[in-house]
Each structure stands twice: as structure tokens, then as C-alpha cells.
Amino acid sequence: MKKTLLALTALTMTLGAFAQWAPAGDRIRTEWSEKIDPQNVLPEYPRPQMVRAEWQNLNGLWDYAICPLGEAPDTFDGKILVPFAVESSLSGVGKRLGQENELWYERTFEIPAKWNGRRVLLHFGAVDWKADVWVNGIAVGGHTGGYTPFEFDITQALQKGQNTLRVRVWDPTDAGYQPRGKQVNRPESIWYTPVSGIWQTVWLEAVPQQYIRNVKITPDLDRNTFRTEVALNTSSDDGIVEVTLFDGDTEVGSARALAGAPVEIKVANPKLWSPASPFLYDMKVALIRNGRKIDEVASYTAMRKFSSGRDKDGIVRLMLNNEPLFQFGPLDQGWWPDGLYTAPTDEALLFDVVKTKELGFNMIRKHVKVEPARWYYHCDRLGMIVWQDMPNGDNGPQWQMEKYFTGEEKIRSAVSENNYRKEWKEIIDFLYSAPSVGVWVPFNEAWGQFKTPEIVEWTKAYDPSRLVNPASGGNHYLVGDMLDLHHYPQPAMALLDTNRATVLGEYGGIGFVVQGHLWEPDRNWGYVRFNSAKEVTDEYVKYAGMLEELIKRGFAAAVYTQTTDVEIEVNGLMTYDRKVVKVEPERIREANVRICNSLNGK
Image 1 (spheres, rainbow, N blue to C red):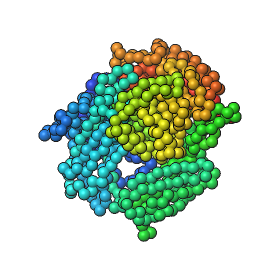
Image 2: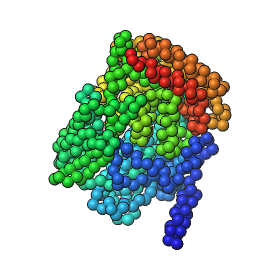
Image 3: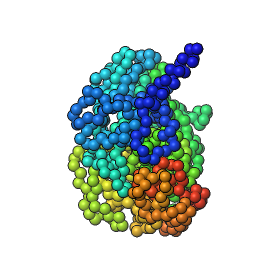
Image 4: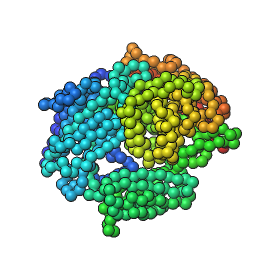
């Protein structure tokens, strides 16, 4: 009888949650939107490279209100499904925010009794753009930056029983200077709907009084070592840090260091990570004081090396593990018709990576967006190299494509420039330990491009373990590791750099309208247009043949536009709702595998 009552109570709560939430609007949606449970939204652990057992997911239905700038709500407008942006269908709201307004959130939560005596951290995966946070009316902190995680120690603000969390968000979209990718207030052409507010998982975590705050892992293939730097929450580095590396259940190395000093583990004949064999080592990182383990996190890493070098013909190539590899993948924007920046489920987030792998690519260029940590985890374990763009912001200068830059760059205000540097550093810090990330791209097509040599020099110095693509298709300088050209629709080589890798950062854009799967049925475009999967595939294969000839002349990598349709762009390999693959997959895969293997043995 008791089980029956519990089941009925759970059913009533679930039905009640559904009654308070439904997707907003009538645009196309993915199949995953139908699987969303408002009481169990994106339940997966959000930080795969630093896992603890004690955590609580705060995703779900929150109260929300949109108020004029500077005004706090007396009452709320309704419910919003976190973590979907307020403009998205899946938020259940589907309203624009605008720079003249602020978005307020509120919910309650309780701390488990077993967390007594521990510190409690409040984590936000990402909030676009400026967030201020209160717990029980006590301000606990704020953050600017739409693409990186942040957290607050809220222990002192907590009370017994029910606690109230309130968040205020302001987001000017393209009326501001901040990085915002392709978001604009007036979407058209290649520019899309704004994304404001909480758009990644919100969660609580219980930690000891002294705890591991961050783990930074650097593989060194030439020395066969893993270097791990562990940051603690206290300024006094009191204790010993122990790092242990595992191949499955087998321990392959362990080392200790005083807190604050790096830990190095040498592994003879390590297994290497590559797209063909994406081997990951499991790792445990422990903090020990007075012989007792007081904190431990689970992580993972991989042995791999990204570099460039000359082949037997003297052409500069991109290298993986000291061997030439032609890196080839799609331009991946990471947008969803129902969730905008946020995939409806983790299964959906994984889907694009799996499909890209199935189509024979070995790389993804993540275009002017940063994904949740779990997306990079999927790339790590499936073997997809990632080129990571900085989301553009501020307005761009003049654009010179087919010569080295002779004009004047964007002159940003001091606040704009400082904000760029802050957010770029946070993005690099966030993704530093991800094995799949191989290339940093600080600028795209002159969008807000400024002080290029200085920014590139800083990026290379801050992270020497990766390559830097200075300006993809943008204003070209003799800095960094690549010269990146864009040419639509077919591949072409307007310049060749004999001292750096020359890459084709964008090409393709073959359009195909699939009725019933369009964001706007009467307004769509592609660089070229065809009427069937066969016609698109024929054109794709033709371009692949042209690219193969250009590889012989010097191209070291290429990026095809694009993974999916996005809003009114219909040049994806899949429709925006991911329900139709718009090409003949086997023919595409055959061409892609041939291109990815084009430098084997050279």
C-alpha cells in the first residue's frame, strides 16, 4: 500500500510539473524535446574531468520575471525550465529579453543532512551574460561571461530547511561589446536568435573544508609524462597531493607532491590518443593531510601531442603524435531549434558528435561558441579533434581575405579589450585539460579582430601545448601556426604560407531545402542550392576531389560548412531538427575517409 501511495504521489508531482511547462511557440523541434521530463532535466554529472559523488542538480522549473533595468520583481511572470535560455522554446517562455530589461530567476532548495559539516558550492555551467546571485537574500557573488562555468561557496549563506536562490541576468546581445557568437537582436542571414540567461546546468556540490578546486593536466609525449597541477581552495598549501593513473583497472603510475607543486607521472610506452584510437587513462587526484585522505576527485586524461612540421616534400603539415595528419571536419555551430544554445538532452548533445564520426570526419571546428563540458567529454572518448573558436564580439574592422593584412584593425575600448582578454583566458582555462582540443582560434573573419599579433603571442605563451590559428578567414598576419583561408562554395587556395600550415578554414555550404524541417519555410538560403540528397552528394564529392588536389599543393586541414542547418541557413549535412540526413552517408564517408588518410605514410 505504501509503495502504491508513493507511486501515486510521484505521478501527481510529475503531472503537476508538466502542467506548469510546455514548449513555447510552433517552430520545428528535435525528437529529444519530447523526452524531456521537467523534474529531471539534463541529469548527467556536468563536469566529467573532476567528479565527486556528493552533488545535487538544480535544473528544473524555476520562477522567472522580466523586469525593466534596475527593478526587482514583486511577483513572478510564471515558470521557466532551467537550463534553457528564455528565448528558447524549451524554456517554456520563448520571449526576448533586450538590453533594457533584466531577467530574474528564483527557486528553493534544501541541503541533505549528510552534508552537515561540509562546505557547499553553487555551480553554474554558463549564464549569458552578466549574472548576480543571492542565497537567502545574501549576495554571494557575480560573474560576466556567457560561455564558462563559475561557482560560489555559499556555506555561510545557508540556513536549516528551505533555502532561496535568486539570480539576476542582464544581456545586451549585439548591443554590447561582449563575446556573443552569432547572436543578434535582429536575426537574419548567418546571424541567429539571442540567447539570454542560464543555459547550462546549475548544481550544488558538497566538499570538505579544504578541497581540490581545479585540476590542470598536461601530457608530454616527448618525455612520456603527465604533469598535473592541482589548485586548492585555501591560500595555504597544506597537505600532499597524490595523483594515480589507471589503464582500466590496472594502475600504471602514481606520484605525490606537496600541495602547490606539480605532480609528474612517467609512463613507459604510453597508449596514444588519436581519432583512430581515442584511448583515455582514468585518473584519481587526492588531497592528503596528516596521512588521511580528505578529498578526492575522479578524472581522465590522454597522451597526445598537437604540433606542426614539414613532410618529406618540405610542406608544413599539422602533426598528431609527431605524425602528419590531415584534419578534416565540419563547421559545427551547436545550435538547436528547440533549445537554441542548449541541447535538449545529453543524448542529443552526443548525437552530432556520433554522426560526425560516422560520416568519416576526424575533426570538428566549434564555431564561435563554447559547449558544456560534457560535449568535449564525448569528443575525448569518441576521438574527435576540436578546433575551438573564441565567440566573437564587438563590431569588426575591414576584412581582407586573399592577402596579408594592410589595413587598420578594430580599435576597441579599454573595457571591451579587457573583457575579451578575461573571457578568452577563462575559456582556455576551462578547456585546458580536454584531450580533444587541439587548436585555439581567437578570431574569425575579422569579427572584432584587434591586436592580432599580441593576442596570438599571449595565447601561444599561455598554452604552449596547442596550435593557434590566428584568424580564420580573417585579416592575415605572419603570426601563429596557420594561415587560414575561406572560400565558398568550392575549395580554392589563394595564398600558400611556406613557413606555417596553410588550411582551408571554411568552404562548401551546399544548400538543400527539406520541406517540413525548416525554421522559416519562406526564408532560407545556402551558398549553392540543390534539390535532392544525390545532387548534394554529387557536388560534395566533386569538391572533395578538388580538395584532394589542393592537399598535394599544401593544404594541411579543411573545414566543411556545416554540420546542420541553422535557422534560415539550409546548408547543413542534416536538417536543423536532426531528423533528416541530407546527403548519401556512405558516399560522404568514403570521400571523407580518403581525405583524412591522404597524408598517411608521407
